[in-house]
Length: 503
Image 1 (cartoon, rainbow, N blue to C red):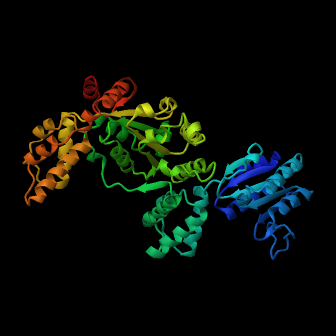
Image 2: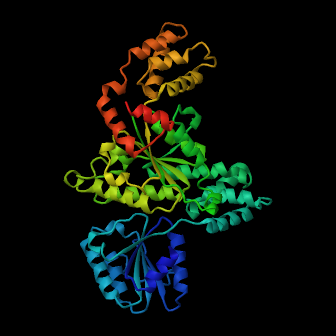
Image 3: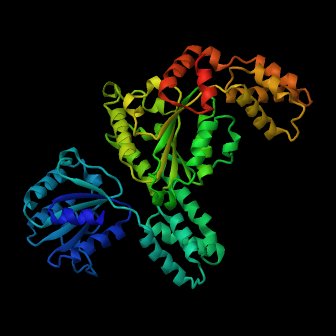
């Protein structure tokens, strides 16, 4: 980012919008660019102190009568020497016609000069009148080298010695995605809680990342206790995931493998799609983030929804490698094609932004999206290149139903030898995994109410009293199977899956 900012300044771009929460760090970076060109001066503006020259103490460089943003911008126009003018938090004035007009006047007067206005703000809100004039940059979070400086300073202050190179690397990797200030605070917190700062405090550092995600408001940090062995059947999908369990390591890069992008899981509701997504993160040892598309949409102001999505994706990238889970994505993007008539095109713009990010992202964020109704998904979403693979999860076959019963009964009773799994599997033909679990729970409630232990007959009675989704929505299930037969990879054993899909 710094190299790009330097190029834009040298190329005499008059207006740059720098999105960052780290004012002090960004200021230092801009000042360092100024030092490379001794003839260029740097000024900063705030609505509390007006315009002042950077680095001057005790108000020596403060300019009179520049507290008003309009007055400050007009002051920049009158300056003759090459300068950078950093305006902090000008976005609350974006709806002011006077401020917008002053900025446009400044852009016109800066042409051919070595003067640039940098709008610095934690949120991206550009007036529509300036969209063709401004260049937007995201000020990147600290890299390993910068975080290492922070860690070294804290180790010196705490007089901690003996930390290994490997331990230092663990702490730095855990801190990736935090701002410099957040990293300083969490390193101090680790030292205070443990008495010293060592690699054993990685979990304390990771807890700060959870707070970062909670503050975002659109992402959820999911902690899943279940392992992938808790998923019955789906052996092809499990095998595919286990093959890629080390896909984000340096060893994989040295081997020449690209970073996986993600996968789309289609299938009948209740057949384990969401559980697979949750257990994948644990299998790979990565944090699991859930993107709630319902929270993305915000009709309070134009452009807010798109900014919400950009912020959520930026947060996911900042703590990568990570798994980003989007459940029932068919509902989120179902109306994108005709959104111009329903929501002014917001859904369409969000869909386009997400597709572009999926196509061009280089960060190690693995996207797992699930969908029940494939006909609702736009065709652009399904083309090759968006996802590494599209899997279809069908209703479990006889062997898979036995395995599902064994898993759920094994969770609730230590001794399951009294159950005939072959009979149970045959009775619940056409049931999804979720329906099998609910049948078992119903049987347990029935026996519990009568003050006795539940039996095989209780489970059979509960299952026979249930109408499975495969019968109530048989047309949709058949249509989904027909679509998936030629377009998706079966999540279960290939031969068995395709045989079942032929019915």
